Image (cartoon, rainbow, N blue to C red; front, side, top):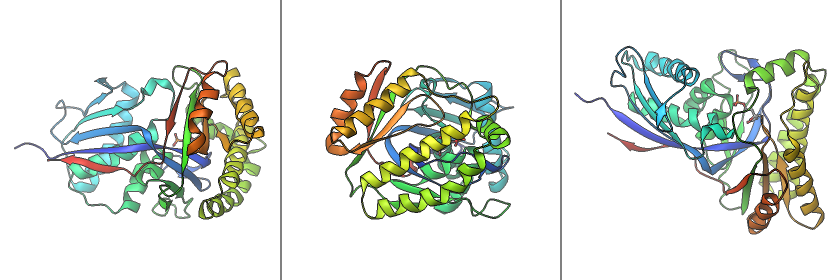
Length: 331
Ligand code: PMV
């Protein structure tokens, strides 16, 4: 008998109101809510079959090669939850491909665990509601909870200790609003410090962490209102403020966490200069040196061109709002 197979795709998402801090590390429960835009590019495609794997273990292939031990372990821990829920004992074969190389340092865990949640539950024959899929994806990576949905998405902090109310929900598909996200890649290679360790250090040692947490609800309310009113300037202002405050709280940790390189600052300056010239463009930065710019679709090519000629920027790409994670093939 051949095992049921399911293939799912998911787009990554970029937070406009950042998630930075956990109230529970085991369950990836966030200390605050967050708000993001799911993209049509920088996604993941994952096929899962509970076919016995290589006998003893799950067989995990990432971008055409056997996954590194660390990645494979994370995938197995995640699949164990799905197996427990579905009453399956079989090891699995997982084939996953990112549309941007994992080693580029661009977040791939968000789309990765969203795609894995949808493909694994599909292959296991579990029919989960979108909110349950979001909760499940969160267990793989906090930001993955948001990639279950398309467009603008809000993640709830939740209050329960078991995390069943720490899930994302869609706010606006984003298709009626002509926005783009331009990514300026400023370094090759993986980020220096993973988000879990950096969040922990910020929460434990930064004198600015509490202030950061206190500010997020206000930013969420402002971002929600900006999206409802299709006010790009207002949304952009929140995004820049949230990113700067997140990084400021990390920079004040002990030892300090600095994700930026000279090109990060050059790109920030370039975005500010473009805005002074009348462009609707606003930056955000995640746990790495790359700069992501939210802008009007009509200006995206010009914004990308300006960033491409900024010293230290290696390459740029333009993404549009994308759809949520979904099954694309099953057998
Ligand atoms: O989901 P994680 O553990 O990779 O954390 C994501 C953290 C940021 O990307 C910096 C912010 C966010 O909300 O996505």
